[in-house]
Image 1 (cartoon, one colour):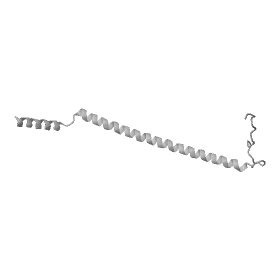
Image 2: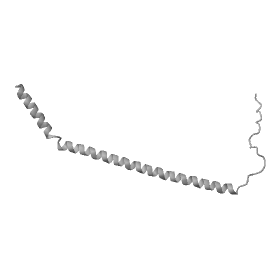
Image 3: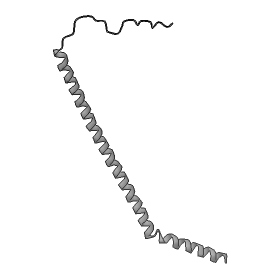
Image 4: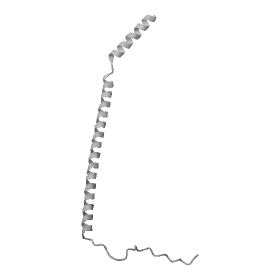
Length: 100
């Protein structure tokens, strides 16, 4: 009897393993693989777009800095330093308000 149960158990396990995964299981695994591939491709494309936009921002900032530098050069070439009192305004002592 024990030998019969052992034989049936081994035969059942062998037939179960021999069948392999069902078509539905294979489809689920393939769908998971496809969705992961699409997600990773989307992430790579988003990273590429971000890198492009950051490069464009850097170009714009560089152009802005160049424009500011050129404008500063034009301004300093034609200006004359004012003559007169070198003391800045606002250094006069304050009067006490009388309470005290």
